[in-house]
Image (cartoon, rainbow, N blue to C red; front, side, top):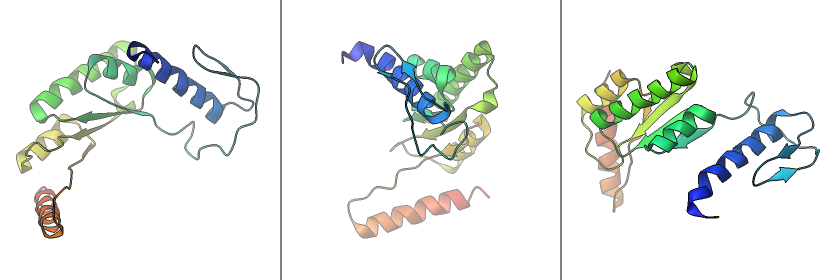
Length: 157
C-alpha cells in the first residue's frame, strides 16, 4: 500500500469493523475491502462498538478523530504544546457539530521531564489521562523510578 493511501485504507478498515460489530447481517463494500452478507460473532461487549482512539499530533490525525474517533492519544508534548493541539481538536469538533465530551483525551510526554506542575496543567487543560513511561536499565532503577512517579502522582491529592 503506498504511504500516501494508508489513511484511506485505515478508514476503510474501521468502517468495515464497525459494520461487523453493529449490523445484524454485516455486508460491506468499501474502497479497499468488501464482504458479502455474513454472520459475525462474538460481538464486542461495548455498545455500539469499542471506542476507537487515534494517536498522533498532526492535523490529519486530529481530523480522523473528529471524523470517526472516540479518543485521542497525543504524545511527546509538554503542556504548552499539548494545550495548543487540544484547542485545535476542540475547534475541529465544534466545526463538525460534535460535542467535545464525546472524545476522551490522553497525553503521554514520553521521556520528557514532567513535574507536578505539568501534571496539574495537563489536568486543567482537560486531559483525562497522562501516561508516564516506566523504563529503566536495572531492576533497582526501575523500582526507584516507580517510587518517584508514585510520589509525584500522590502529591497531586
